[in-house]
Image (cartoon, rainbow, N blue to C red; front, side, top):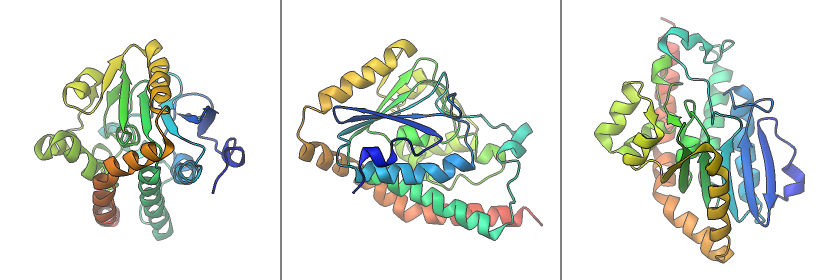
Length: 257
């Protein structure tokens, strides 16, 4: 079992603070907004596993640093920036990336404490990290996109192919993934992806207010409710993410020829 002191200062891409059983995870790169990288890919699966193993975490808030939740946005014109040093036909690399992605989804959904996302700005890379939380709050400047996959020439097979058709409905979800769509916070709210939209200044206080209200419930009620409401998502991810990643890897190899 994890203890907060053993992992609180362990991660370069996340700042952790806990008060009265409420853990806030602030994703960042060098203190600024998180810029997706191999470091984040490596660290986040372990972070989520440690958080889930620590029964001192009763409610979790996931947010970003500065004015962006996670970026940068990728377009068709700069797809090579996905990871400039990415060796697309390196078997060891692709196997490692697959293991890390499966581990990240598994570890996030295995967390038994209720999760609140406070989306402080654009979430254009791996916005599923926020949308897999139980309560999603968004600043009015937030946007949601999946720019790191299909627009960058990659198959969106790491879990977004499961999540967005589930959140938006089969047809709307497929449209979102194929059309490089970027939804505003208000649009996301209207479509049911987001629970509340507010000013950026009100976002973190609101997340803490909700967390404090949830934390008045018993630990058993909190943990069993979280397990109950994510089980369908967890099962579908477990079944379909390996298949999606296999297709994504095949695409990388076929692009060589």
